[in-house]
Length: 215
Length: 152
Image 1: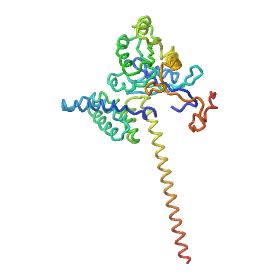
Image 2: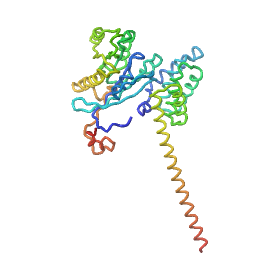
Image 3: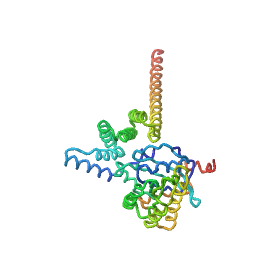
Image 4: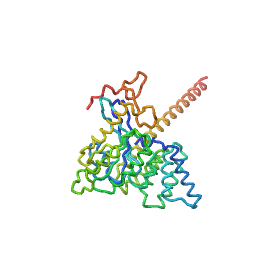
């Protein structure tokens, strides 16, 4: 992917986790490319995606690590949890087993991230209403009990995909504003970039400021 | 792709899976496929070339003996080779993979390796070109001297 011609104020690290085949990579693809990936093979190990968003007039670069759901990668992908500011935990509303495994994914997340990490639960494939196995109410209750944010989404239609990624960022940003997230801690998953390019900066960031509105 | 290739495994993870590997080796005399893969997955993401080479060796063995996980092994063989700038090998594994399965993840690794390898070739040509210029210069001086000597 080419470097976006933007300046940004923050970098937030996200991870996407959940069982195999729930649509993690499709959600990421829909978010970064605004397209549905029709036949999406199993992710090998880890994939990476990035997009710059805006919260409160601040530009935030999301660095998103999309982990493989296959069991054989479970132990080794744990190292990607460290230092995540946001964790998107995904299940498939048409497969109850993927919902039943959430508590184990949640345990991993809690153990491997820090207390301020924002965890967002996504019930994917909401377009497949006729084969639904998990009700909205049930999942909402689980989310509330565990203090998670929650939405049902569809990587295929795009419904609620933006919302899930953006609301996570808003919550992280809010945590920063309220001092609940220590920016100096290496594991916070957030890097702050000065908004004004300094005189000494010679990166593309400085030269591209005036191109911000090129569409 | 660059982010993935530049990302380095945390030392404690590498050590944990290394310990597991040696533990099984001592205890049972052989290491399970799962443990071998976990260790190799960490090794190819190490910052040290020797670790990466070791990871590649383990993955080569796994790919030869265990067809069921082959796509994972082949991808990380391409990945490891790309990280130590073994671009020809890396491309070979990407192509082998893509012959069996169409896959965007592998395609973007392939594209990245191609780009890097083209850059290296261009660099090599620049160096060779520079060397030719220097050599040409030396020859020119030598010839000029020769001519001058003859003129005397």
